[in-house]
Length: 131
Image (cartoon, rainbow, N blue to C red; front, side, top):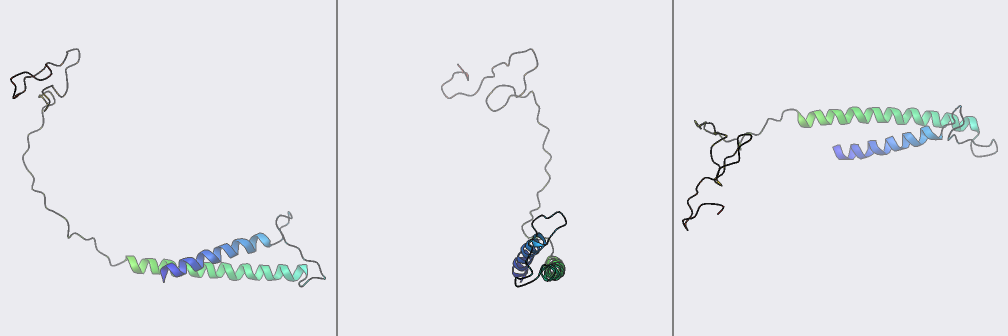
């Protein structure tokens, strides 16, 4: 129902834009004028477009209120799903030392002005890392 009303509101909005643009403005913009010998006189066309604008604007407002009511009705009353929430135990983990050797054997942060020293790594061939 919500999708249907949204589509109807989009159509009404498009028609409202077209009807507003068809009206004769004081500056002579996109106004459509009719000849008196035509189907409708200029005054009759203006009255029709004014009435159509009022009807479409009223319909647009009513659809907006209906859509807002439906949106509130479908979203209220829901609760947050916590079925997948996991309790994570808090562990006493010591803070990492930024100057401690990293996995690769070099310090994570070298002091400024000093070159990082190569730390020996347990190599199965007996050599130091990086040699």
